[in-house]
Image (cartoon, rainbow, N blue to C red; front, side):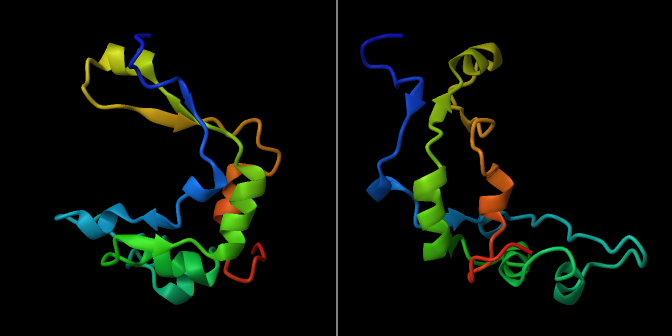
Length: 128
């Protein structure tokens, strides 16, 4: 790795952690197809999705307009405690793909809370 290259691992300080999630659908010209109810074949309603996801996640899933979704403070506090895993630069993958893109990933296998649990909390901090 050259002297000016980006390091393999990047650790964020608490004050550098994101305050919002990016909703790529807001910037898509062709929006993705909605989730379909397997019984009816029709797009799922917020009420139907509420049987699977908490209310805040349903709102995010159906949001095609807002590019940024604020991360609730309770979730940001959990991130500070349980998100010590760094962003890792995938230099070998970039080379194999021969892409100018910079590819990063997060390995959550050493996160005892698991990544899904922290990402699935509603604003009251309770898991559904």
